[in-house]
Image (cartoon, rainbow, N blue to C red; front, side, top):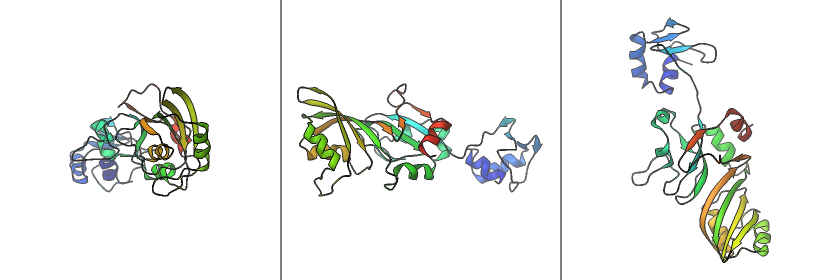
Length: 236
């Protein structure tokens, strides 16, 4: 990789900015000054420093966010706050984006990355990656609902969903807490499926994507980087 591209990718400015750093003698490779922007380096075997600080090159970043209510799953918006607004500006040069989406009022597990292949591996309809939700429902979910969800539910637009696993966790009067596992991600799907059997979702949280569960130590609005093991788990 060219040295100017590497440094630009790591947030040291544009290619023009990097050329200035090179001319200043601020950049070294294996402790040797480098001024040629076209100089190729291997960040895995060569040490690159800028003003004496080692450049820890990472092409991709993977974050787990516990999404709060009131923010939208987008990279930018002129009106609404976005999930990217919650991420520290030190990540800005990675040009992050959310993996899939959660509705504005839905909370829980949202992955954020700059890796398109990672996004595709989790969100492509052909991959059938399970997403697990906990929902508070206004209405009594029944064994018959469990059966209907297992067969697929016809939505208001005539689309029949793929089979889903509905578990009734608890009941409190007319309110029911459910756990729902889906292998697809249609628009407002959980809410529409529950509405199709005559009930209403009042609160919705995503707690799992594939084998990855939401970190119980993350408060709403907090995030952390995925471990290498977690990334491999999601994209072997």
